[in-house]
Image (cartoon, rainbow, N blue to C red; front, side):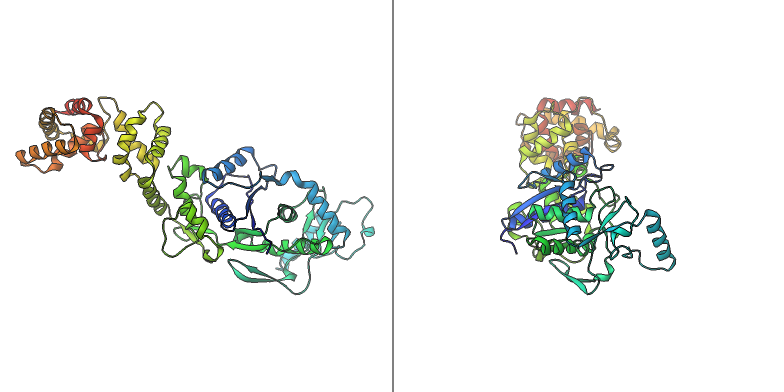
Length: 467
């Protein structure tokens, strides 16, 4: 192993940073940080038709929001085509690659025959040992890698253990197209080598690619040395809670959707993704510092993990309860608008946050603080303010108006005394009070609400709804 661990996260900016990519990025980052190495970012933007600046910005923004920082500026694969072609030509000159003059029509005929004979679809090596002089003068050609024909290639994968493939199953694939542009298989190997990547940690849907990429490493190592095999770790994919492949209906959305639309805290998503396929005993909550200390590939399971939105929300609720109130106020202000009273929100936060599973719920629960009289009522709240409810509100309002000690303890004592005097359970008073004070049927404790609103505003709201 090289003296310094270097990992890379290599997203394609044809879409936003989805949840599976975010976990791959996290595992790469944690492995590098755990070993005191480097974490690098490579943007695989060679598909110019589908790559967008918007997606690049969203990926970098999402990684930053998750707290994943990188040790160098991002490498953009599209800017390195000359270097990729340089390596392809070295392979060609050294006899590890060859010119293939097969036309598109010939290749399609070859594939049609293979389909008809129910054979594996792979290039048949027709130009592997032919002299290029046999081709028509000026004919276009692609450069194909000369892969091993016999034996097996074995990988000691850090997650999948020992994996072997018969070399005959890997055909001579194109590394440089007829128009001179490099293919993905060549580009990723050259980039990884030039970036000094020692560990390729990625989804196990790329496992077969390792057997196609290793021949390039080994051929270049034979040509000029210094191209050691990387260490591979192929992580099982994430499935939905039902065991099916993860899709949008399970929550396979961009990271920004969890932040902006679902109100998930960065620390909660970091923790959830960490535990999605990696474990350390029964630990549920793991801080970032602990994650760096504890993470290693030996803790990654071999089976697909299951994404469960309810578990993420429950974990997020715990993080909200533990979060610094000032941080939560800042998040709520983004959702309510900066016209809201930050000081009042800060005062209210200990009462608001115990019930919330996400930041949107937290913001919704704070809206009553800034509502204008008369309040808009939810359907359930309006039902509580029937004739009986309004009559009870009138009794409560009269009793509380006489209360000079506007504290939770005094207001609770006064209301309980009234309930006892009327032969009512406390809920028979508290439910219409909550509706009149907040316009909803859910809120912090009713006496917290009275104190947060203040005497004048609380009495005004009670009087507005009483008989």
